[in-house]
Image 1: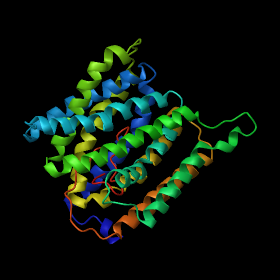
Image 2 (image 1 turned 180 degrees about the vertical axis):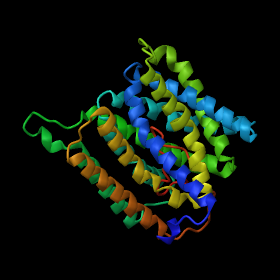
Image 3 (image 1 turned 135 degrees about the vertical axis):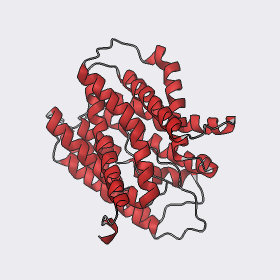
Image 4 (image 1 turned 90 degrees about the vertical axis):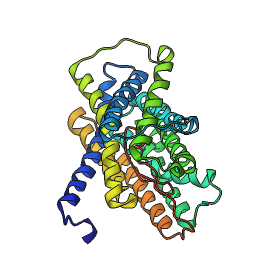
Amino acid sequence: MHAWRMTSPADRRTVLLYLGAALVWGSSFLFMKVGLEGLAPAQVALGRLLLGAVTLVVVMTVLRRRWPRDRRTWGHLAVIGVLLCVVPFQLFAWAGQHLASGLSSILNATTPLMTSLAVALVLPAERLTRGQGLGLAVGAAGVVVIVGPWTYLDGGGVAAPLPAVLACLGATACYGLGMTYMRRFVTPLRLPAETVAAGQIAVAALVMLALAPAVARGPVTLTWPVVLSMVGLGALGTGMAYVWNTRVVDTWGAQRASTVTYLTPVVGVVLGILVLDERLHWYEPVGGMLVVLGIVVAQRARARTPVATKEPVAAPVPPAAGVGVQAPGAPRP
């Protein structure tokens, strides 16, 4: 426990940034749910990306960070922008029409497991150890419990709609692939974290703008709750929280910073219950705890695995609604 003791003003400031990132990313599913009251799913994704891009451009200007200048780097940023932002943001927004925000936040916690699996499949040098395989199996069992398939046995199932659950899992699978791609192609470039975040969000915003005439149609109803939710989702969740989490990783290291993964589903569930009067079935949080247990098992197994060479740590990039998580087997949140 001594490692968590605040011994200096700098460490206390880090704790505040850590808690701020957990609160913002845990609130992202609430923000999406409220945003969907006046916007279509693709409009929610577009809005959060535009607001996030503007916020990060301001951050880049204030910190005087340089933008990449070569096409190769921008190409890599475009790939992770699509995998980490464009596709998953739309999937989570679409699923948010059918799922409680708390349940979406629980499913988002599968991101580290998806990253472990993607790393093992895509990077031949990083095969799963027995412990990591056990962690994935426990996490998969947790997903099955979350879905609650037994509720359909009598023909009157009360579990979450399977297509929406699969959309969330598809989003976290994109995060896993995106973070693995980042580790392979972007981390070696040693770009500042703010540059990686701003670059990928800016490209993702441009891609969504190009797709908007085809996918972001429909009426727009901008009430104050919708507007404020989109500001929270975009400027904070897709913008400032990136910077906060970067500071935490710089101070505490990726492994310790990764524990934000365990807090964001709790925040999401509590806010859904308190603000939206959502009700979760008993098996959903139980399944969520199994997912977290699987993450812990996989992380500990990875920590015990000898590493031949030390790799640079990639810029933290929040998965999904904005949950920055250092995934086991991946270089970051």
